[in-house]
Length: 308
Image: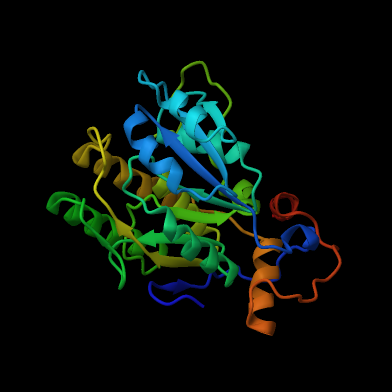
């Protein structure tokens, strides 16, 4: 198990559904990297080449007026290029999640602040049994050269509120470098990515990262913090606004705490890799996997709700 960070065992942890195709994971999980973009052409020239070529890359444009998408086509012709259906980072991520085909989804910023070499640590954490790997700048091994004193103080306060409300021990709530198994996505009940005639939906903005974390915690997912080094934004102004976004995150925490009522069936991919490590000491070694006999995760959730 990777060292550093904190380990949280969700209260609903149990047997994962066995509806996955084991042969599909023989060489490790397939990785989808979702990159929301808004006028990041200069940054993309430096960021895209750092993402491994065997990863699926999904770039979601928020209406850039520079040549961001042309740069993507030039440097990463195999990337999936999308235009988000509404506006806001949350909607961009939701659109990217919907298009992802990998076993693992990685949330990755285009501004150069995230180090693609750390993706291996996030994936290893998921393979060790976590459902959700949450990046942290404030655990041992993490750090930031970009965060201001104001943002650090605000993040500390908001993290304390989240821990109090959800009974967790997070060290860094407001950090968007995260990864999770794709088959838990339906259970997070994120905003529908389909167009809504310009209507801004809950979760469409920067609050999406807090929404995802809160819902993962409320659902009883196994959450593992992964130390991460945040770097300076390479070019251009940040789209963050400390006071505005901080207030929205606080409202998000309260809203999600009041509406928490979720359950989870743990994913087949994570169960397979976790059991492989436990039994053989190697994540890609052969290990027995029972034949499918339980419903898929989304169907299980529907069955639970129907029985309430």
